[in-house]
Structures are given as structure tokens and as C-alpha cells.
Length: 182
Image (tube, rainbow, N blue to C red):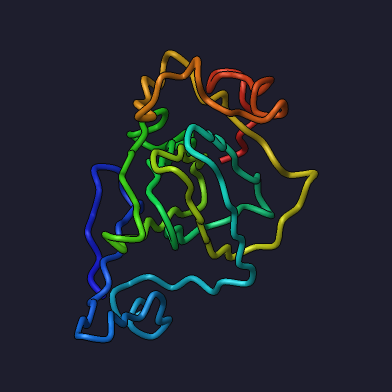
């Protein structure tokens, strides 16, 4: 496993070493010791998985402290545009976002630390997304930012008028109105 930095401090891409042969492939998707040796010391306690159709847009979600969640996101089937928005108020990159294509084919993972809102859009026919969390879900601490906040200028890889979005995500505030405690 190798760690690739992004323009936003603490937000990293994890690339696994993939071994391919006539049978298919094998790789370690997660190894706590390997990541710890590279400075990533997160203990995960919950795995989440979703199945979504093309055009689905989930997010942007976060949990406030003390229930903030670091996430390790990967795609088991299909392709998504994964987005993390820095909501750490003292960060020099507050309000900036990072987007990356994650797919079953490229096997990349995005490690999202505490202090980021997260979302993704499905750009393949379907996608199965799995992510590890270092904290259990806590409804009372959840927050969100509207996916189409014009100040964020996120390219979700689709025409947003065709996006399939939950009723809950449609009523989220923009970043200026979010209740982030980071």
C-alpha cells in the first residue's frame, strides 16, 4: 500500500499493490499495521455499504464531535466521483473540496479524516460503495451541506437536474449555514 497526498492536508489516497494472474487478482484493501507504519493510525469500528444506480448523488454528510467519523472509502463495483469538503474552520483549505474517481477497476481508496463532509455521485450503471468508519453512527450529531452549493463549485460528473437525491439531502444548507463544530 502506498499513500498519495492531495492538495488538502490530511486527506489522502490509498493505492493498494494488486497481484494479477490467470485466476484474476488479489490485494490487501486494508492493513492496519501497514498504514500505521505510514503515519495513518485510525481504528475502524463500522463498515457501511451502499448500492446505487447511475445518477444517484449521496451527500454531503458529516458527524460532529465527539462522534465525528473518519472514513476509508472504496468501490466494490462500478465507478463514482467521491468528494470530500474541508469543514475545519481553522484550516487554510476550509470550504475547498477534493474530488476523485474511485472504481472497482482502479481500486483506489480515499481516506477522509475528521472535519470533512463527504458525498459521491454514481457515474456507472450501478455502483457498490463500501467504507470503513472509526466511530459509530450517531443521528444527533449528523450534519450536511447541500450538494449543489454554488460556492463549492463541485463537478459531480453529471447534469444535476437529473441527479437522484434523497429528500433529506435536498433540504441541507449551504456551507455557510452548516452546523459544523470542527
